[in-house]
Length: 195
View 1: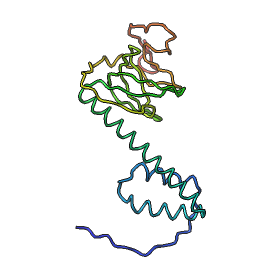
View 2 (view 1 turned 120 degrees about the vertical axis):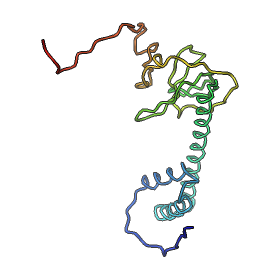
View 3 (view 1 turned 90 degrees about the vertical axis):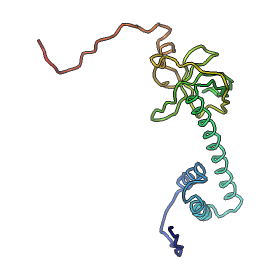
View 4 (view 1 turned 135 degrees about the vertical axis):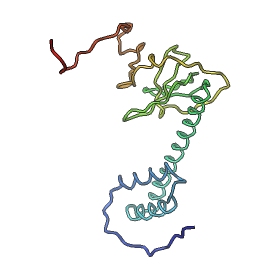
């Protein structure tokens, strides 16, 4: 059994910006039950007290971190449903908000979860569009698992992640309405033998 030793507080000569304090707040809100969460919240309270002497404004800052915590919990719940759907091959009903802010409710057949450097996506067969779609996970507002089986689709039809909000899968707008060329292509690389 390990024992935690309480130490006397130390004053550190730190200069921290409000943005850096906000980053600490967001990190703590995203992991409310993580290791050292209680100590982190105590440290954040001290940082906020030093940066914002007005108690009302400080309370507003703390309240805004609670909103981040709620959002992180929603994202975890959505991801959990999507993972269950993938492992159980089940249809999911998602509430989705597109880039224009328009909401829709769609039945989808999840195929995989994908991550790029900037985003995470649910790659799924959209029954409304009758095509593979890349749904940004941060735009999925809710996900409901159904008992209906979701067939597996050919991974060759998944395409690539969207660039600038436009899908680049074979049936997508990136081809300008042209059908993909099914013939294999030979790509010549520099180097090698020259006869």
